[in-house]
Image (tube, rainbow, N blue to C red; front, side, top):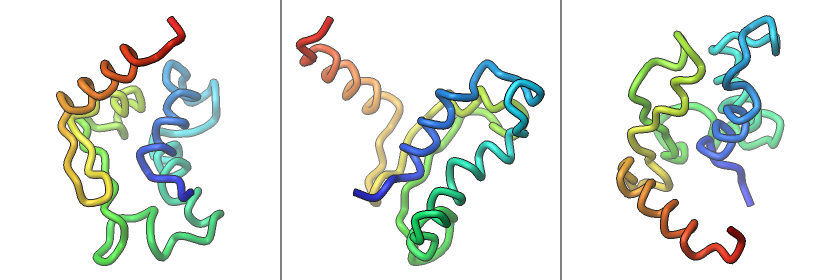
Length: 106
């Protein structure tokens, strides 16, 4: 199953939010590249994903604030375009809440 930009960004964000440049050695720009373009280069899928271009998969995250000024802004998600379908912040929160309610582990 191919990794989406959203999944890669989320995984990387979990590892770096709360750390400064000295703590992990990445600038916000480097962190974003590491979660978007680099995984697709590694997987040989850069022709289909990893950058915003005509003809590539339309998986995008719309953020409230600029992650280049503070990587923690990558948590301020306003919506996600996933497979050509727009998911608003409210839809994402509602989906997460329903998953939490359905979870047998509490």
